[in-house]
Every structure is written in C-alpha cells, then in structure tokens.
Amino acid sequence: MTERWKRTLVAAALGLALLLPGGGIARADSWQDRVSAGSAAATARGTTIEIAMLDRVTGQYRDNGPAAHTRIESASVMKVFIAEHVLHQRDLGKKAVTQTDLADMSRMLRASENAPANRLWVAYGANGIIADIKARYGLTETGPTSNTRYWGNTMITAHDMVVFYQRLMDGSGGLSARSRDWIVEQLRQSVEWGDGGRQFFGLRDGLPREQVISQKQGWMCCVNGHIYRHTSGYAGPDNRFIVVVLTREPSGRGGAHIEASITAAVRAMFPEGLVPRVQGQIGEMWVRSGGHRGPLGLPNTDEIPVRGGAVQYFQGGGAYWSPATGPHWVIGSILQRYRAMGYETGRLGYPTSDEIALPGGALSRFQGGYVYWSPATGAHAVMQPILAAYAAQKWETGRLRYPTSGEIALPGGGVMNRFQGGHVYWSSRTGAHWVIGSILGVYKAQGYQAGPLGYPLTDEVALAGGAVSHFEGGSVYWSPGRGAHALRGALLEAYQAQGAERGSLGYPVSDAYAAADGTRMDFQGGSLTVPSASSTTTTTAPPAAPAPGAPTGAGTATAPVAPSDGAATGGDAQP
Image (tube, rainbow, N blue to C red; front, side):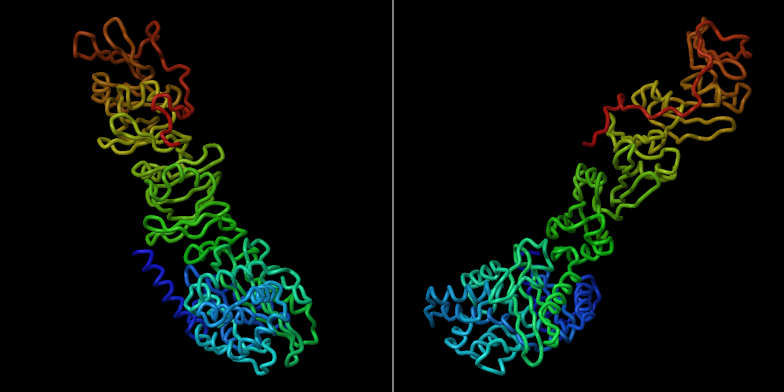
C-alpha cells in the first residue's frame, strides 16, 4: 500500500470518527481508559468536564461521551476563531492585515489579552466570525454567542474543538499553510501569565515532560453563575496529539479549585507527564505491561513500519508486532542479542513472547528460536533443530542448563551450541544430539566432530551401571570409578560382538594402547587385543596388573567435565 493511500485511509477513518455521535467508538481500550480517568478525577471534585482527544497520525479519537458534545461557554478559547477568520480574509485577498493587526493577534493568542480580541471581534463582524468558522470547518455543535458584545459567550464543545484543530492543521478548513503555521507558532509561544491570570493550568502543568505544547487557554468567571477553565491545543513537536479539556463549576468555589481540577484531570489521563506516542496493539501491550512504570518505560519513538510488521523503541527496550505474533517486548541483554542477530529480519524473526522470568535467568521466544539469559552466561540464541534436542532435555532445568554460546557453524556444514552442562551438535547426516560430562571430555580429547569420532549419532544413553554415546566413528562408554573411554574400529566391533557392557568384558577401564602383540584395551572382565598384522582379535582374562605404561582408568574423574572453551570450534560466531 502506498503512503498516499495509507494517509487517505487514516483521514477517512478520522472523518468518520469525528462526525459520529459520541465519537463513533464504544470499544474499551487504553485511550478510552485515559479519558475516563481524567473525567473521574474532575467529577470527584465536583467539576463538570468535557474531554476529547485525537491522535492525528492514527486517526484514533476518544471523548467522554455525551458530555464532550454538550455546549459550554468558550471563554478565551474562541480567540483562535478570531485569528483564523482574520487570516483567512487575508488569504482570500478580501482584507489587508496590518502589522498592528498581527501584533494584536499575537498578544491575543500568546497572552490571551482581551483588548485585541474586542477590537477584532467588532471589526470583523462578531457572530459573523462564528458563522464563517462553523460553515468552513463543519462545526455542527458550535453556536453563536448570546451576547454579541462579548465573544466569550460563544458556545463550543470539546468534540467540535478537536474537529477545528484537526482541520486547521490539515488545511481542510480552507486556511493557508502560511497562516496556519503563524497561528500554531503563537500558541506554542503562549506565556505563563496573561491578561491578569496564570494560564499554565491544564496542559502545561499536567504534561511537564511534553517537549512542545501549542495551547489556547480560556478562563472567565461569573457567567450564568459559573466559573470556567479550559485547556486546548496540540501536544508534541509534530503537533500529533490534539487534547481539549473544558471545565465549569459554580462560581463560588473560586479559581484555585477549578484550576486544580482541570490539571488533576490531565494528570490522571497522562500520569507519564506527556502524551505517550504508543498506539494500537503495541499500545495495549504497553499498558498491560505497566506503561511507563513497566519494563519498557517511556517511548523514544513513534511506531515504525518494518518488513512484515512494526516496531517501537522505548527507554527500556523495543516492542515488536506482526500479524502472526501480535505485540511483544524485548529488553536488556536479550535485546542486544536480538540486535546482533538482525532483529526481525534475522533468523529469529519476530518475538512470540514477552520476556519470561526463569529460575536463575530469563527467556524470550521468537519465531525462529529462543534467546536465554542468565547472569553467569549472558544472552545466547538456541535455534532449531538444536532447540528440539534442548527441549527434550527439559530446557534450562535439565542437565544442559543455560546456553553459553549461540549457534556456531562448523566445517562441513554442521553446527553446535555450548551449554553449561554440555554441547549439542547437529549435522544433516546425524541430526541433533547432546554430549555431556566425562563423555564430552573424551570427545574433546579426540578433537570433537573434527576428530576420528565425528558427529554424535545418539544422545547419551543410560545403561545398567553406566552410559554410552555413539558417534559416526565409534562409541564412548562411561562407568563410575572407571571413567569414559572411546572404542573405534575392530576393537569396538569385537566388544559389541561379545555383548558390549552386558557381556563378560563389562565396561572399559582404559583407553586403547599399544601392546607387544597389537592394540589393546582393558575391561572390567578382561582385555581385547587387535594384532597389528592381523584382523584376528584376541580376548584374555583380567590381567593381574596393567601392562607397563598402560592407562588403567584409575583416577579418572567421575564428575561431569565442564564444556570446552571453544578452541576446537573457532568460538562463538555471533557478535
């Protein structure tokens, strides 16, 4: 879909949402929850409140129901109508706007001064200004003032003010970009004290972490027995968010009470101190995970389209979404590993889980594999088909424990992963199999997969009184007290022909060694000898003592041997 069509669809969705009664959106979500929180905060203080807000990028509009569509006196908020009308007349060539006019409008918008508004209101037709704005901006809920001498009685709604600000920004109200930018710049430069009062209640006080706020405030008292405080405008350096909050109370409560109410409402809506740029499914996930107090913290970017999905970056990590996986967050060392492997474009693909706490570590699942982390090992990926072998060993709770390397490419097309408790090897000929403990120590001494044993053909197989792992080039048997020993070729064939460990020979007690009559290996129940010049293998009874210089297995470690340091494989191929 082209960017043009994307923008067209967003605009269409926005128009429908803003024109439907009640915003046209009834589904509960985090943004509606924010509006509800703000409304509840003001209502609890006895304040009548209207709230409406819009994300101009996504077209997401929310308000507090019928209240946001109920007319209320505008106070100074409508001064932005006066400025728009004057500049539109200039755009049309109908009026010459003088430098005095511009200076007056600047003071009217920045400091909310009344004298310039009084002059321009009369000079440009009073309620005729309102009629013009209503017609061009489609403000169906806005009404003229009941007293043409005072513009502050113009009737507005929170919903209609959002419509106005949106159409002012996109140009659909007919104002030129030059005039629009001038108005928004004046709102951005609004001063704290203006026309006898402090005007930073609401948006400014409620969003202290927001980078840019372009606001038009309104305040007045004792009209129809009420006091009014309104806050409205754009939030964000790109004016992405439009927020309008209009309030009214019985005039006897005074300005301090209603200003505290409107600011409390904004703070309840945005406890982060800014309008978070988190929307859609990523936004819903962010809220579920604790929002700005959760593992992600505050957003650093908007949502970014990427191949097959979207990503958004936060202070604490990244949130990823695709249609197949939904939204999930990745943080810390696991995120660093994910980055090193190419994020969603790499072999891992999109995350299929948030980070999962494990005994002694953590895990994030991805489409292409898992990434495990522990303080002792760091973060490493385990990919298929090694992942299946790891699963069969009960993941990190099994004998392999946590991975200590990522997948390592080996000569000949195979791969391996190191773990705290052993190694897992894979080749297309043999599949994936794990090697651990003392058998791994013998495998290391034989040169791993590059030595005569080649790749493992089986996992370690438990036997009566011991264990064995079979390899392409032989087998390694282990028993307590006698350790692990490799058998290959004619010796292995003869041993298996006699029943292997179940036969009279029992388990090996030495490695193969050179003897006067050939190559010999000693067992619990005797010896096997392969003559040097003959294929005939001889079996002898247990020797009274080992042959001179021959290893006997005495002193062989029975505890598992730690995984190798990678010298034989070239180390971890991942950054």
